Image 1 (tube, rainbow, N blue to C red):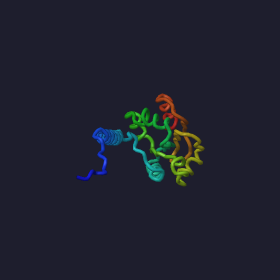
Image 2 (image 1 turned 45 degrees about the vertical axis):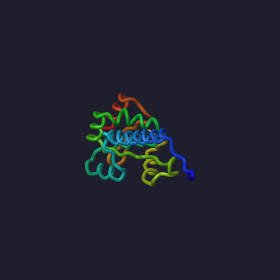
Image 3 (image 1 turned 90 degrees about the horizontal axis):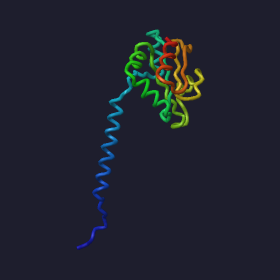
Image 4 (image 1 turned 180 degrees about the vertical axis):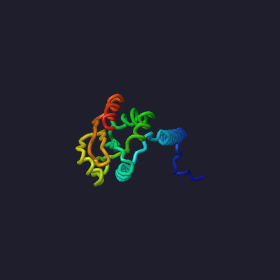
Length: 154
C-alpha cells in the first residue's frame, strides 16, 4: 500500500480557525448593530440639505486611523441625546480624510479641509448653510465642552 504525501491539518488548528472566524463575524455584526446614532451625510448631500432646510452644517473631519476620532464617535456621536440634538438641529456631514490610506483625498474633501484650515483630526466645524464658520472644536474634548461648542453654533 502506498503512503500518501498529504499532511493532515491538526484538529486544534481547524478549531482555532473556526473560533477566529466566529469572533470576526460577531465583531462585524456587533459593529453593524452599533451603527451611528448620527445620520451622517456626504458633502454633496449635506450642502443640498442645508440649503433646503436652512440648518447649520456640522462637519466632522475625521480619519479611519485616528484614535481620538474613534473616542469622539464612542463618547459623543453614539450618545443618544447628543445624536438626537445633532440630527434635529444640524445637517451632519462626515468628511473622511483618506490621505494616509490612498495618498490623496477627493477634490471635495481637499477643498473643505483647505477652506476650514483643517490640520488635525478630529476637527468639528459648525457652519451656516452658506459655509460661514460659526464654531469649531479641534481634537477630542469631553461632552461638556462639545455641548458648549454646539450651543455656540446654534
